[in-house]
Length: 324
Ligand SMILES: [Zn+2]
Image 1 (cartoon, rainbow, N blue to C red):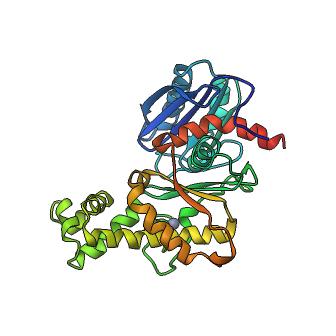
Image 2 (cartoon, rainbow, N blue to C red):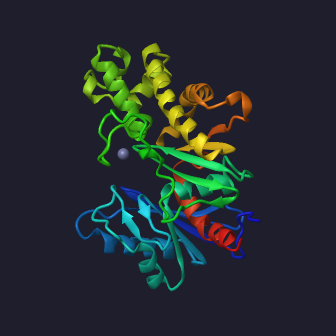
């Protein structure tokens, strides 16, 4: 059993993003009692500086009983960050072992999507469920998976890279080198691409106005702004976007059969616009929806703090899952 309460008080979590590191301390009831942020060091020799920043943040946040770190990339089960496209110079960066040596106690490290999944599972939108799929819709797509009440990491720790499922082998090229990955369509940059395609076809006048008059400047926030005003063409783009999101969610549901799907990341800020189209298309695209309970689709509760909160909870869920 795991109720998210380890046998000690303060738990500290730090979420390392491309621009900032956000640290939180949780009390024994899971409330944030302290919060600090620092810019993420950039440039050629930024990794030793990043270790310094993480040590300083952990110490500033109080007596360190347990520390978890969320990182934006592929992280092995022993805390080595193999690759991280949004951090400079990362290749087999031993962030977990280096921090453990500096601080003198174990440090849990996991992917930021997995951390967000842990936060929503233990203390958020998926509380009380044992089978939880979390998908972050931001600049790209990340995610995490809880199955039968335990965090799933896969053989290497790399499970949850849902954004690079190919949904169209002839689609636009992805930074990962392949074509038609889900995140080309169903992320914030995907929404912008769908909108620019429509705008260069001489549609979306209201959206282009929000973008200062140039169709090539259209971004997701301009579509959202026009859609909030009730613009029909912007709402059509959001409907098309919702269909791409739902396509990936239906594939994941066929593979994983979750009870609840939690949507996090930057696009959660427009939940009221996106949820309707996503749920409608999801029900339409799902395999055998009349023969199965349809998973709930909800937006995340922890917003931009999900990664840090989940990182703080990592040591306790790891202990629980390894103790069986
Ligand atoms: Zn890709």
